[in-house]
Length: 352
Image (cartoon, rainbow, N blue to C red; front, side, top):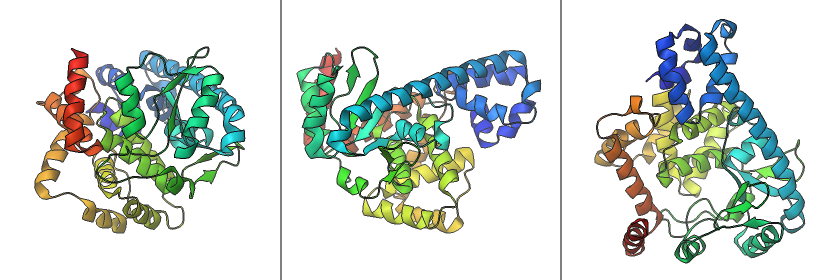
């Protein structure tokens, strides 16, 4: 697959034929990776000699991503002004954290929501403040509202009435009813790191950022931007690779938070697709977190299809079945069967 090959070895970009570009550009666009592909292309010595058409596509995507980054920074300042007196330092998650801390995954990344982390006892106050400042949950079914508040790890998303930006307020990384247990905001905030260049903001610790991204990708069952999210993990690991004791802390933290399985899937898939360099000792240790052989066989089969770009040129036999299996698995991990079955039945009737 051409996009996989370029993410694994960006030097190949300068050797692509027009036929290759005709495949790579649509694959990157639907994966949310066109601006990141543009950044990789610019870093190559032969960028100026690339064909004009693909270069224009990538430059346009990079312009959009640059504007998005400025908009996010503006919005973060507005949110800080609103919530700092209640929360103190504002802990950011995923894309917003990458932008605020200027981490490698921020390069060319476009995302829909600004994610923040608050303690559960602060949820009501934060929601009230946002509501008074013009943030609304919009039209939401009462069942869905109860579902978020009773079982999920966040309240329903809130959108600003004027700027149309969306904020997700989290109190955990995983749902309350998840089979793997709970990860509270307090556990994460204990190790959060303030951002020196952006006073009033913090990110999760390096190891918690990796574990959050891995858990979101491999436990949520949403793979429309799966390759982009896997790329985030690759870039985070390359960035933190040489930090003292990073790998030891990552493995220890995964066991402490009971997030060893998504870490195993993350490391096995990034080495398969992107060739991410991992210390032999760390990868040998993470193999102990693997599932049983039959489960691993099924998961490897499903993930090999789900982590392809969601483009018709990348569909393999039974790709739909693989995505359906991962969707059902995500719901199984999210809540026990006695809650899951009525929930899925209700959702099916509501769709009809």
